[in-house]
Image 1 (cartoon, each protein chain N blue to C red):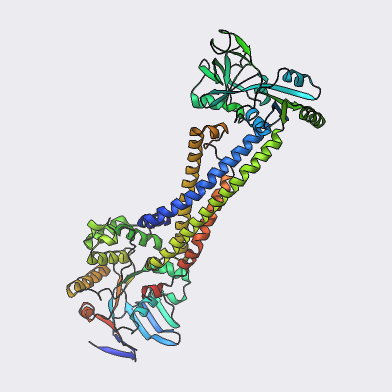
Image 2 (spheres, rainbow over the protein chains, first blue to last red):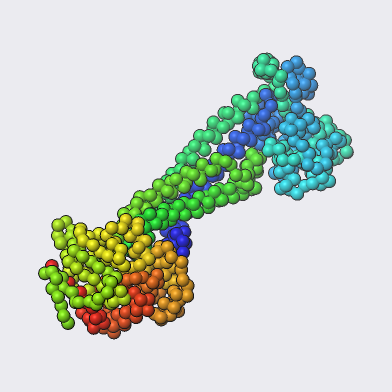
Length: 386
Length: 231
């Protein structure tokens, strides 16, 4: 019969009180966990996927859409680029690297792009199985695609690009890189469309590009290229850094409001725990007095109340963290948008330790006054019924 | 019955010789200058069963609380087993109480969220003693409560609850059992039964028993008696 067993017995004795306090706290912690997972993974994702890309060049349109579709593959391309843009950029002085992309393909909820093998080396992704694509009709899949779809080397993939379907065969699986590659299916730029889809039967078609990802050799070169492209009526050049900062700003406003709601829920739960323990101290004055008669010290009684507060807080926090992670994972499984964001509920973020600390501190604070009350219980007066 | 007046408010019946288990000397307790108890001298021998009899307001409960170390006297000495408990620190008093004193009150104060068995375990836990399952089991059997060991206090009859409180008080083999009004709310038959059980359980563990009550029906169960008069 330890303090925890005794506390658990008290909690079981008032199940409704206990469950309501647990639920309220779990709701607050769960909300904050979801926000934390979302914002951290989103920011990390933005930073990782845009690393080393100075400009995204695409057809005339929204710069944000260009970045979202060309770098993060979360949106459809604005349009296709005029011919010769890639070659011009690739040959330009001051451009260290130009990566051609034909985006907008789909395989179920997974994005399919046509590009060169150099695209994988830009992100430093190694192969887990097989090899990179060499011939038309060959594809390489990211680690998350392989994990969640069960696709492996030799698996067929029917990818759609608009109203056209391309039959691909997986020839390689990439290792986990923590980048956009994990969630992509990649193939070469020479797509072979089956007959009746606007091409000759079995003909290989060099597709038009939707984006060119440009890495400049210097800041001066980047500024010069930007100026030059700004004057081009057919092209848009967007800086991933500028666009994502703007995007994060918009999202941040919404996240801040939800964060406030989550904190309010936690403090409401703390208030609930405080009220429950405070009332319990009145109901249990006799119990506390008899415990002192049995040899319990004042500190024992204080610890008993603190343990109850901390146990409710600990359980509520654990339930909140678990439900937050489960919610994020389920949301990523069932929402294509969130899935494209690369959101996962299976990863523990170090910042969650702060959330745990916050919840336990709030719980301790809520239990402190009732615990002091327990410490000060006047046994003689209580037993005499005064 | 030979009563010796030792203070205007306190009378005692003589007790036997030898080293006393309880010795109270010049004990005075007051609240806001109002005297609640003034006891020049009282002693109880080891294994003795003593009745403290007096009307409401005579200081019976105060006497029990003083002996249990729940209250500290304004002055005087209270020795239990040669230990002057008035000189113990609060923490030491808590330990002493848990190990050497068994307490029973009119209101039983069984922990409602725990079974009878767990109430007994709790008594051992707070006294810092190992829980002797066989001893606990034999106490419950002796009190015809073995079949209710897993029951919560709310599932017990008033008589069973009273016996459970007695079981908890004797579990740690205390040197002294203090009972405050244990029979006041009981009918005659139950009163006799509880008194017999108290005496029986105290004798079984070799404990000294002090019962404070205004219930004159208990007179015949005790050979030794301290009479307190109302102020």
